[in-house]
Length: 297
Image 1 (cartoon, one colour):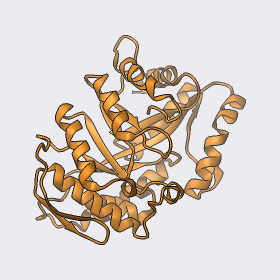
Image 2 (cartoon, helix red, strand yellow; image 1 turned 180 degrees about the vertical axis):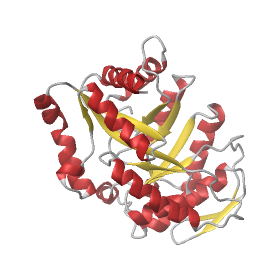
Image 3 (tube, one colour; image 1 turned 135 degrees about the vertical axis):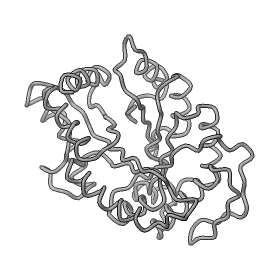
Image 4 (cartoon, rainbow, N blue to C red; image 1 turned 120 degrees about the vertical axis):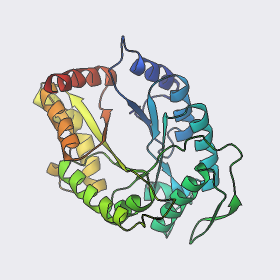
């Protein structure tokens, strides 16, 4: 992940270095975020895609209350056409506090997200799309330049009802930082309930579902430095996820320990693990832990 605290003008060079086989770690994805008052997700994804040739770039996530779904589909279609097969469109509820700050809070969060994802997926497929829902209203819109292959639309969600929703309507789920293997297994079970509720005859139903898990990374052999560096993250996600401090998952510690924790997410069922390094040397930390993962393979 390109962390939101990094300056936007650093993104292109960060992405290029990440992809360079001579200097960058061998990764498949680069993820950008769209949090209130930081950088825009679509513009960030565009910068990263333009600076690279191989990496898949994901937005994790565009808040549905912020965006009209027709506009989202137009933006996503442009990226998917210009950079085919390299873009993942993430949509989520957005932070309630942030949505309140900008007057975009919705009393029908689940309906808004489900209807937004359905509308965006329909438009990206090239279909003439109409939605007359509780929150989304689109009347016979067809994209003039739909992508040849629609990008996956994934839902960034946390709670059980939202995870089930993701299973019903999205091509994948983004799990936020702080959640470990037990949370991954529980999420997969809930997502499966949503997928089971979809008629196999529905032509708009997703055919596959990718589970993408974000996790913080901090590689250091000194337990005191690890504790100091990760304390703010643990405090933030204890509050945000509403879980005990000891349950907040971080891939932290010596390289071998961090690598084992990353591998535990894959073993629990994650398809993609997105590392969010803590500290001043993000690429160095990723290089170190990937070298350790190669040793474990």
